[in-house]
Length: 400
Image 1 (spheres, rainbow, N blue to C red):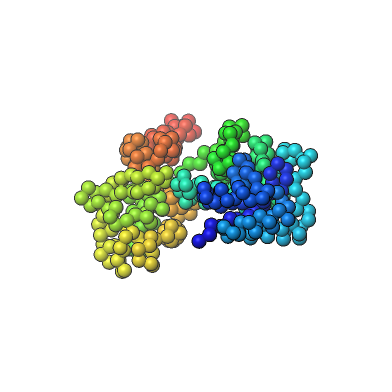
Image 2 (cartoon, rainbow, N blue to C red):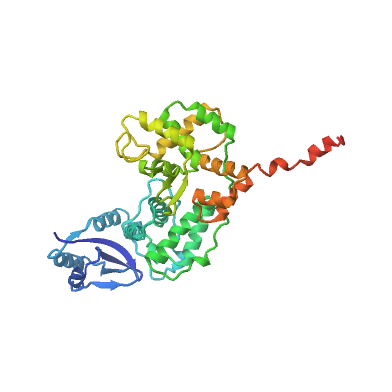
């Protein structure tokens, strides 16, 4: 089977060029380097040809002798170039890098032009090689795609620190992005320019917005009880009990396997949780009884995961688990703006109020940093109940 070489366009040294992209292959490299007019660019890490029709056709004929040539991206670009002359003009030699800024507001339906088609592919490849989590991969790819959509026909690889600083200012002022979203976007850009392109680390020059301190949203023990009582479905009740009893994330609940339950040691094994961190948490005796009844009555009986979807052997979806929480919240008449994750927040806060050392809570929750766990000290009532308001003091002394 012949290897595949993909042709795409990009800007190199202020000129349009055609990139030859394919997975690394030493034998193929030797053949490609002999093609008429082909050159290597260390900046973009690919072989390329000048954007010349005759040279390109001749090169394709040579490549077809030893590889399959995918011209899909190149044809798409040429069609767009033909239909939109205003978008087809290459960057002028007199144009300075500082002028490379997003030229329009991001709107639904915007596309990524072929000139930047390689960016997401190269980025995802390195993310996967570095074994980043699926959620991080999705976030980084989405954030990077927003920049590419805004750039239009401008080449992303040509942007400099000053350009990116102005782009982020544009995101904050024009698009009104919140602090956390800006941090995610900066992390994605940093990954691409410093790790994928191998540029010298420069993001320390770009100031990061100060994050908003958001306190965890917590349910009282009475509200938790009302929610649990409102659930009649045994499987749904088991899901909610499991999350609250051990302070698990929704993803951890649905990925919990039957073999992760150790009744002899009264523990639950949480494998490869957030940050690829394994941990062991206590198994509540009450939860164990509930799970035993649930497994005994479940039809069909789960084979691998504790909570399986309608397809045997497949885990229950996080959206379904979140929907269970929403229904229970509504039935219990709770008006607070809380989510499934609030069960985890409530678990930690209730432990703190019972006098459990915060260092133990940190390990149970699987936090890397104690500062993350310390947020719960701000919502705990353990110390607040001992503080008397000055207003109450005035009444007690009959001053008012």
